[in-house]
Every structure is written in C-alpha cells, then in structure tokens.
Length: 346
Image (cartoon, rainbow, N blue to C red):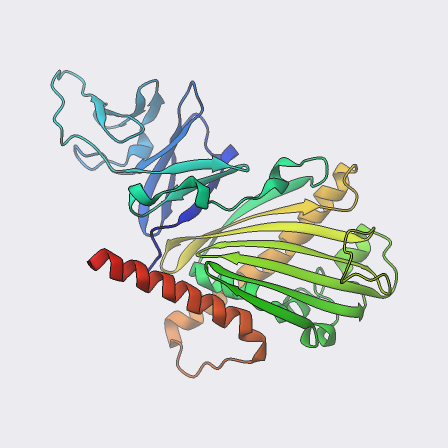
C-alpha cells in the first residue's frame, strides 16, 4: 500500500524533453510531456480514452499530447481538445491528469487527490541551485526492490563499513560505536551520527589531504514517503567539529529520491554535490564516480534482499540496536498510510 497524497520525485528535469516520457509510479503508468513553448511539464495517465493505446507512442503538439494511434489530442488537464474528422468532442473524452511541480531541477508528481496537491509541501533543496558552492552531478537507477528497502538502507548506516569498504566505508568499529541522536518529526525524522577520532575512508583520502585521524559526521533528514537529505563530511580531529563543521576538510551533500514503480521495483534518484574543491570540475566528477560505485553496491545488496523476501518472506527476522532510525521511519510511513486509508473510506 503506497501513500498517494504525497509528492514523489518523478524525474530529473532534463529527462523530459521534446518527446513523451513514460514512467510507471506507484503501479500507475504515467506519461510526461513539456509544452513546446512554455516548457511547462504535465503528466497524464498513459492510456488513451479511445482504444486504450499508451499515449507514450504519440507526440507533443502545440495543443498538448497527440495520441499515436488515432490522433486525438489531450491538453495538460487531460481534456480532449481535438478529434480528427469530428467537430463535437464528448465531455467523457478525457484522461486523468496528475499535478506536477518543477523545483530545484526535480520534477515532482502528486499521485493522490488533486485538490490536496500543495506545492508548498515539496521539500526545499537550494543546493541544486548553488552551482558555485555545491557543484553536483546526478543519476537515476531502476532498482528491482521495494522502495522502502532503500529507505531502510539509508536509515541504518552501520552497513557502510561492510558494503562500502573500498569507498565511503571506513573503520567498522567506529561505525558500531558512533554517537547517534535520532529526532522524530511529524513527517519523518532527523538523525546525526558522529564517528570521532577515526581513520578517513578511501573516498575522503582521494578527495582532500585530510590527515590520519578525523571526526566524521553523517546528518540525515527523512521526509515521508521517499525523500532523504544527507550532509556528510569530516575534518581533522581536535578541531571542534561538533560545534563547527564549516571548516576545511571533506564535505558532500546527497539528495536521495526513492519512488516506487511497483510493489517490488522502484526508481532511485540521487545527486552528489562536492563541498570541498568546488572550483575543480574534476573533483565533482571524481566524487560522482565514487558515490556511483558505492550506490551500485547498495543496489546489488537490496535487490538480493528483495529476492530473499519474495521467496522466503519476513518470518524469523529480528531487529538490532542500529535499527532505531529505521524502525521509527517505518512507523511513520505506516501511520501516514493508515491515516490516508481511513480518510479515504469516510
């Protein structure tokens, strides 16, 4: 059961161009298109109301999206505005339209009740617009796993030392003994982990001359159902990192957008922003490659996890102390989903 009354990341803005762009979200086939003059992005159900042909096989025209089967044209609101060879257009000739907003290089879509779609609810991420201080690159994977497994993965960072030994991992003992504070919020949670006086992982060493012992932080904000904002870094030990992280060292920001495709597949959108050698384009490229390597390791683990759950179920699984943030996250999603379900039945 997906939360429908929420903004989900649907695409990076550059993905949607002159041609119809299809993507299934929350088990619903959608087609996105940008108006040729204004560039405004719209989303429709990917199904013509005439003979059920997918609209993704059509083309974008000045009036909207033209079906590639019999030429009917639908505007941004899903209303049919043209039927070849027919003057009268039936009121029933329409397809469902979904609210869309474009913000911070991201295309967002609202999958639930249209009247509840308030763009003010979309998370702010100004770092995508600050190319001088936070130069970045971004990516999207299609992952054969439920999107919540990827959120789980981001809520329990003790896996870094084991899955990402060659990149962002670091000392396993430091991860297990990290000082962690979890703060519940109405729409999710915030947590920060401190790994004090530890060795820098390989990715940090490649990026900057940071010394032999550092204090690391991992700060995460989860906004239900599928957004995670991350600020991670480290500075040389003994420089009061807990009170002042804005010092020379290693720093990056990552945007994570986890959007369900089906019950057992999802899209993982992410961007990695370089916060250390901002005037060096190669540094941003190198950072992206490091994170891409690490996240593909996550992808492999989570897909194998999904296969195990599909074939063997959840029976016998246990929680451990490092699951604190993950458990709260799951409770938040369950609460919001149940509240939405109850409201829809009233």
